[in-house]
Image (tube, rainbow, N blue to C red; front, side, top):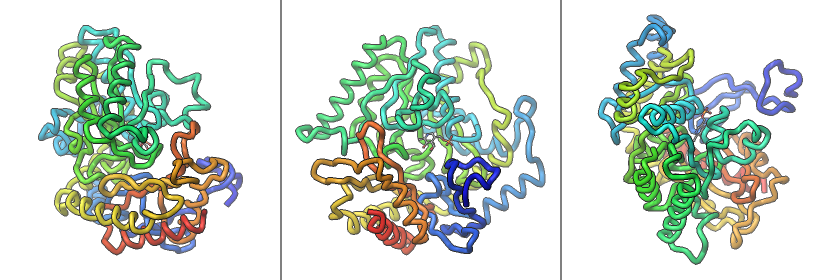
Amino acid sequence: MEASKSRLLHRSLREAPPKAVGGDGVWLIAEDGRRILDASGGAAVSCLGHQHPRVLEAITRQASKLAFAHTGFFSSEPAEALAEALVGDEPGGLAYAYLVSGGSEAIEASIKLARQYFAESGQPQRHRFIARRQSYHGNTLGALAAGGNAWRREPYAPLLSAAFSHVTPAFAYHEKRDSESETDFVTRLAAELEAEFQRLGPDTVAAFIAEPVVGATAGCVPAPEGYFRAVREICNRHGALLILDEVMCGMGRTGTRHAWEQEGVAPDIQAIAKGLGGGYQPIGAMLAGGRIIDAIRQGSGAFQHGHTYLAHPLACAAALEVQRVIDDEHLLDRIQDLGRQLERRLTERFGNHRHVGDIRGRGLFQAIELVADRASRTPFDPALKLHQRIKAAALEGGLACYPSGGTLDGRSGDHVLLAPPYIATSDDIDMIVDRLGHAVDLAL
Ligand code: PLP
């Protein structure tokens, strides 16, 4: 459909996407009746697939009792229960949950909490944030300033705060020099981060912010061993906070509930979203360490931030049930098993492919990167819009996956991100790789 015939503003102003009219487990049903295998849950959202009966029932149950009560006046049962489920056992010292409507809001809250903490604990000069190139933290102005996605930032550059600066990402495929070992690479990145603290003035930095496994901008990029421990040490030494953005890679996606569990560090503040509610309702959360909240409690006594739909009861009820299903059905174990299968199948199918330069990821969060030349790791010309051709070919072949283009600076190429539902079967995983292989070959 031409977008100009629709009153709805779509992402593309030229072409409207087909309508999805139904869902059934790992399948999406399009308006023409075609069943499309959902291999990426949109953008790593639909972790329980579609129309999970337990989650639908939880939403209906809550809706029949109370759909909305403003948090300026009331708390609600599902909000209290969800916070307890998320931080009741204080994972990594994270003791409080602030419930919002999505990932960008969770990041805005994280940035503002870090700033307010220092403003109220005798270090008002700390207002700077160090982030990484080729990361994505959301599309609101604060989150966009933190992000390093050049394409998304470009039109809004004059509006983006200079309080954010960016260092080299821990993206070994493109950034590690051939002469370097992984350890050398980590040492160089740590030295660069240290130098950035020194350049800015270490006591002016509020926080370092990063995705433990980089999602959409670079395509499922885990950091090399030891990187996050080095980052944590630098932040600690300079009294800055560590904010981890697990909006995409969190809530089980990589095989542990939080991706940072695999890094041997814990953040001071964490953002989660997508897999928290699995797409059944719009919801995100900021998780915060006790010492941060206690300092503000003893200071002004209020987090000076808020949105109308904070801790929305229906969203909280849905997220709580999603998390209960993950626990009850032991899906973290399943993610690890299926993740190994996905990685193995991708390697079998694409390991020797002349245009697949890298296969990477963790758990059910895996990507392939396409390159014009494997030896030199040269990306395809962005004008070819290869990722869009793959997306179209995949859809035509009954597969929804998440291809993205390379970065404007040519530091990464087209990639295809896969984030299948945790309820997928072994046969579904095989079918995803088969259909992707077909789509890639058609598009090239
Ligand atoms: N952070 C990361 C790592 C993301 O992948 C995203 C969304 O893709 C966001 C933040 C923003 O989340 P939302 O789109 O829900 O605002």
